[in-house]
Length: 252
Image (cartoon, rainbow, N blue to C red; front, side, top):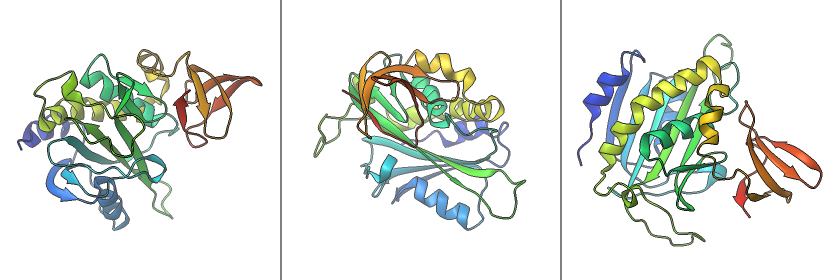
């Protein structure tokens, strides 16, 4: 498989000193590997790509395995110190969707959808280092995207894949499209938070004006997101603000 590692490095390194690109044949999880490195004190900026993941993780601990060529799985690790972390996964989603295709939609808080089916997901983890408040936390931004058809075993809705819109697209080409704008978006988020992304998110918002059911049993109609990235849901009790840590949301 061909990967544009050098082109990505040339595009990103001027904005992210010390940046490296690593492509490995197989890993349990790119996020898990970068978190292990961070805990061991290795916090240099890195893009880590696995051609195959055996124990990828989604939100709430869900498993996400990938075979060579049928998916793109990578993690971006870098020091990050935003004033407010709220909405980072939404800003990442905006950047990914804009880099991929006009039809890609964002399902709050961290999924990409295409034609009413899940195309991919985002998992953000951070490592902080006790005793050094001046040091930025190390952020690990994991992304998994379906490139080619994938098995639907155990899924209530079959997955979507990018080649439905972009025939012949290979994982390496998708990576080259995604990473330089993603680094720029993360740095913009660090500087200014989610507010500058709010309108761009609204243009891709899968849930807006749709009936939704929250995992805590509440239900209502989604009304977009706030400047901090919280979901607004109009329920029988009035407008509720839902933070990403509280619930998962599904179209009713």
